[in-house]
Image (cartoon, rainbow, N blue to C red; front, side, top):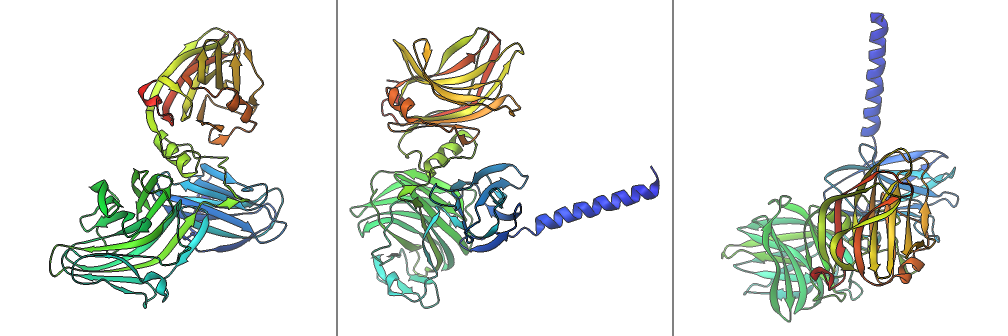
Length: 522
């Protein structure tokens, strides 16, 4: 190739790479609770970026401000791998909403706004911590609502001041502790996400934290961090303290003068965050009623100890209700077992009560005959559960093979539910009674290329859901769920439509049981 032509080509390539880098660098950066206004032409798209940390919980709301615009919201990795997408959050709205996105790992992510079909117009975008319904965003302007003193020990009362546009708590002396809570009667929350910025000045050591579900001065939860870079969770019940989690370190915890604290309360689960990274989780059934939020400060065991804590930018979010109903997750992030389990709980498909029976199991089954070959996967009989994993298959070219899972399996007479995938990429859910299959759910996938599918099944007393590659399999589950409500075995299966050699390799299998007797194998 001519040297001059080569130089021109290299220069053009360099300019192209530079343009791509500049384009990526210029993507607007989203901040928590800072609305963004935008507009799109037909067929256009706008890319935003946001930075988040492992285990963080975020929600995104895109509201059209033009009557003709129907926005679509997509979340993907910086490498372009799609994670979640939403068009209409419910049949009653054109808002595109993702509630409870669980961040897989530290890093930068993209949020892309497009228009459904050829729709065009303007929109308003909001990124929120926790849930998608913003209840409070308080910068602590002067107000008497934050003057409620709940607790103080020692001789020196804590000084409470909101005159600087934040909530400043000053405490001096040895072993002093103090708590204030919101005085507004309406600021009472059950399932909620709370987040606060903390700015500290101190002599000697300190503790600072969040008071959660405060019922009265004798009953509340307390999440604390301290100057030794440790955290703990305390239950105060009838004035008596009980440790739910003693002081322990976490890699994200560092001693610094400024940081954020947050907590997610969802039923009997409490997840706690430092610098928006998940650092711990406890499950407790003691205080399930709604309560207030408060802030805690404590000093060291030294007469010269002093702590000045400034709390600011208090944000409270709750689960979004549309027409009185919570958002249903038609799509979930495909992740490792415990990460998927956490997302199902955060997105309110599961409660916190249950037992992890199996985590990250690998097993395989193979057969050459037409029909269904079942081998029990875990001991025990299960009615209410969640399970997931990935199945990889290989099969001969002379016919259609498949893999599956059977559950609520009865043997006499033979009766079970089957979730299956075949080697054409199709998948479905059906009930078998004796030698017959009742009509079920079946999805063809003519464009599928590959030999693996991820799956999640959620089965409870009143619902049954089946996700394939993170997407809910559409259809009517009610008949399948009510027709076979009894507990039964869970088995892996070869599902051969033809006499072909099929090998099914199940990887990363996990099982969460919500049946009390299941853990003992009864």
